[in-house]
Length: 586
Image 1 (cartoon, rainbow, N blue to C red):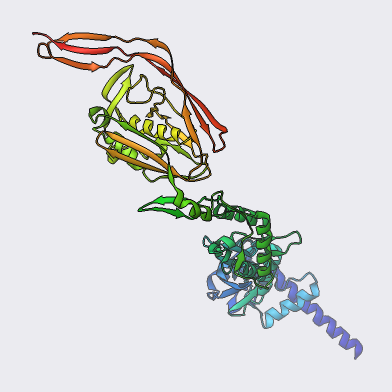
Image 2: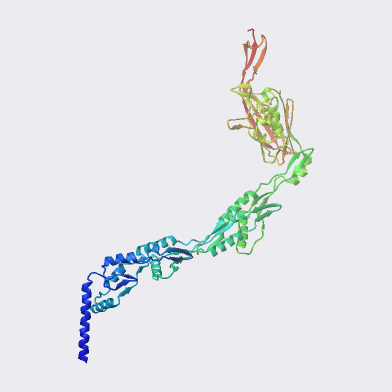
């Protein structure tokens, strides 16, 4: 039986092998009979025909989306955009390879199975295209990679502080991104697939919390305004000004903090000093029905070093949360005036005239009919010259303009008199009168210029002309070198101008030398006949002015008789020939 069974089995095997061999010979180059993919029979077709039939008869492949989560953001892509499709070549290769195993025994079994019941294969779907997946991964990396952004505190123009939040950066590995997507896509049957993209967060060095803390400190420092007080005076540093004293940034240890800028504090105190510092102002007088006292004012100078220390301490207290007073007392050095209110009140009843002078003139076209003399005189009436102060005629009379009433008047141009040759001509009668009043008050004299030629209404060698030309000014000046204020009083009338200086008696006496005349040059008169005048009529065009040099010395002594001023005034007067027009018959 054993021999018989073995013989029968051997015969069956030989028959099967023969059948398998016959099947292989019959289907050389074609898919074996009975092989199908899904419901599509491919038996008897060569590989290309099988591929074509699969491509034509496979059902439409449904599409779906894949949601990629990238940190807190999402990105949706369609599977078809990733290259999802039937893998026709893989299915065609598999169908053609059915029954053609490298092991002949396996091929016999497969071929007999195909002959009896057929071989069914499932459609093969390729979930993505490698190149498209690479491109998607690269785009995700490029679009989402970011550097961390540190938080910061910005200062507004009004001194407010605003926090700019930090931003966490992101770093991606393109290979890891691709692998995550590929792994998720491997399960093609899942609908609404979600794939988490691996990301490495990059934390900023300065966090939002650090910036919030710095801003809180900065707001505390620049909170309520700080007031420096000195008696009734108040000097305020506003919140915006205090905010400018704050610097926000990282220190050497990397901490992000609000700090007080010492250099800015010193600058703020230097600016404050310009408001605080003042010179002592002497008491003075005003003229009304009677003389009245204008109180003196003490001077002061800010102690900047002490104020910087004081301000830094107050700001440090605010920064630490301890708070500080809104009012700080100024650290100042006080200086007293030379002439105090008490001294002025004690002497106001003793005011007397210490110097005066009067000039008479003829109002006419050469002096703007008196306007060019009375306007400057009235402008300085009541002016007070403090001890040590200087009176400058051209500066103190104010602007010389048409709006104030000045007119064209006489001037000496190229050695000749021009009745309307200069604006404000004739003003020298006012300056000369003031000069002589100051001389007789025994004051310290300054700038002075004599006229081109001598004018007889003025004291010889003691005239004082003033004018301005092309940006240069020739003025007359003197300084109050007495310990008391001086009040200027003026009187003007038709053809008269008087200046008087009033002050507390100072005991000074003034004397003058007799004028010393040298280098006389005689001028002569020129008669010129003209038919423009009636026969025998005369018209004086230019007067006759002899030339000479004059020297006058003034001596000023104090109450003890000691000389305190010896001034010699030199004047060079040019000769000017006269011109007389005489009429003759035409």
